[in-house]
Image 1 (cartoon, rainbow, N blue to C red):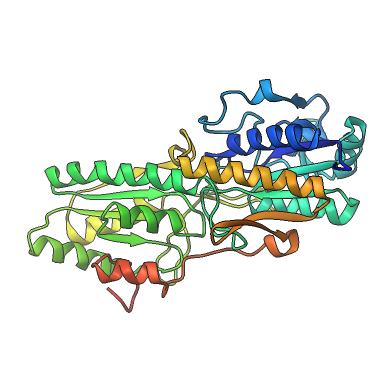
Image 2 (image 1 turned 90 degrees about the vertical axis):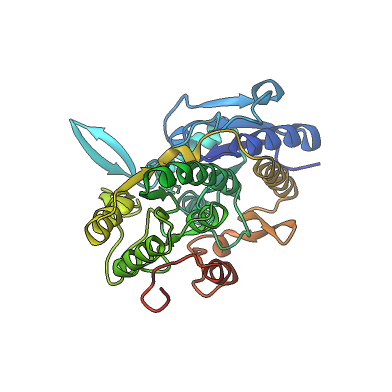
Length: 369
Ligand code: F6P
């Protein structure tokens, strides 16, 4: 029997396919195997800070949610109890409301928290543990797949499926119009989505943040293809892609130091230069949040379910301050210290990049194109 009788469950950061699978698994296994009560905390950390933003979760609440995208609990990638953005006399100010969040947990009888999120959300979980001794268990989540402590995050495969389908569809229209089609995909500083969908979709070039690109090389690649009879090209551009010696394309700078800038415009920047260099017609498709939506793939549903069950097992057995993760084929756990602040990026000399290069996909880096 578990010592913990009531747990809180919160989803933070950008949503991602598979979150509802985690929620369902947490609720079902907590009730069935540990006779725990589960309190759903709404809209990420907002639900801890502001009153009235929780709901009890039972079998009824999680019925039918497995194939649904998003999170039934809501999420926020701006709410941080240590720096809440509050409106005061028409001005937005940042306030530390963490003590209030901990007090609310006590009032609600929540003895431990299962926190599902990416690096930012899990850093806050670690801070709650370090500063107040809150009992937390982390579950890694992000379509970007950029957390080094887990082999893969749920949501990534679904995002890659969506992006690959888009690349497939763009092929036919690129060919019909003899155009250069550029597809911008998400991923922040990591090029995983771009690399996977670019390879699966047969892209001619893939531009990722880990390999700064030389625009002249891309232009030459497109002209070479033209010369040999391929009058169209498909270029997958990660939103964080940057030219050699340059920076990523940012559309909005954050107002808080712990927030990340909003990326955007990377593919358009490439398209503008390529149409000047090659005189070819270029068209840009920005997939954006479409990659975060839709029904999760079976793999993502199952990984989310396994993570949810493992998180409850940790909570039931007193394994706090840890994050569940996938290692090889099995579910394990690591400390939050090992889990946060360690990005997993594409290795420019790794096997997957080498395989892509071997079949002629160009990354347009200075030495390779
Ligand atoms: O981290 C997930 C992610 O979808 C990134 O790939 C993307 O840069 C970012 O979130 C977008 O965030 P928002 O939903 O705030 O626009």
